[in-house]
Length: 178
Ligand code: NI
Image (cartoon, rainbow, N blue to C red):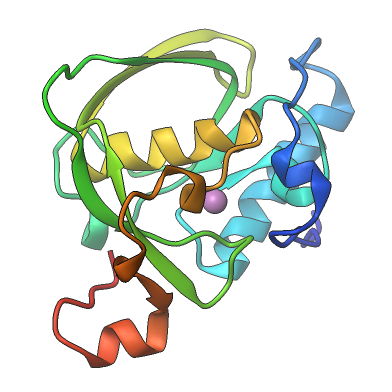
């Protein structure tokens, strides 16, 4: 396995739409998934999408540690989702919450998101799966899914007063790791 280089905001792959994975069993795809999980863990992130490691494929990995899980629907193993389809189930108002991104290091912003989503995808073995997610889990899935369409979280923000350096936000009232 290998630690992959993470693209930072400004690199055009981060604002490009990614292509479907044709063959999940392809050894190149399997190695990519393993390397993305390792890269995510090394960087201390909860999610990582293929475009963030310079690969324009519709695939992301995520792993929310128990300390950050606020709902019981969070799997406590690294997940890989290929060719995901995302459905916003909640038709209520979007909920603001803090987000960071490994492609936008050191910064954090308040992003409105749906609090309940359904995702259909293939897992790493190519088996179809369906996920119902709420809370932070739903937020992570929307954030990672957006990467596949070339959307970064600042493009979803509505109030730029709540956008800043992690260190400053942590130092002042209202700042949060989330
Ligand atoms: Ni991100």
